[in-house]
Image 1: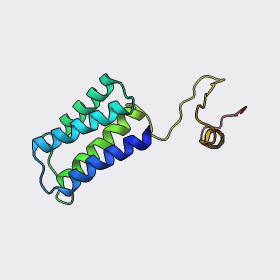
Image 2 (image 1 turned 90 degrees about the vertical axis):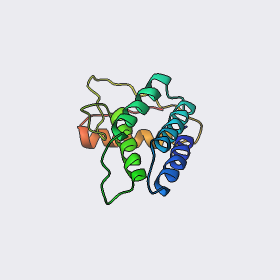
Image 3 (image 1 turned 135 degrees about the horizontal axis):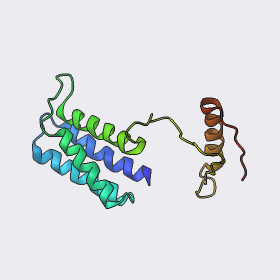
Length: 138
């Protein structure tokens, strides 16, 4: 799911960053492609719409820094908004919030996809950064 989304967004951003100056139509076309990519990655329609509206609002009329192209500026805005959507308003993007013990975590995936490895890494992170005790079963 994320690989396809990454490829689609990468293609959109490659086209944007190769252009020197961007028109409103270029940004609108790119954001339409971003919305379609999000929907194809099973993101809900209201979330995709809100995301695109937030990016468009931030991108419209924003002064472009001399050291970056307008396309790079749009890519940065999309990146910042993705972090905001995934991490929340006041959240630290790398922080794991597990307030109530015990907190079960279900890992789902195909055979050999890395569930056990990811779970071990998650347990190590919880132990080191949050001081949590971890019980792991497979």
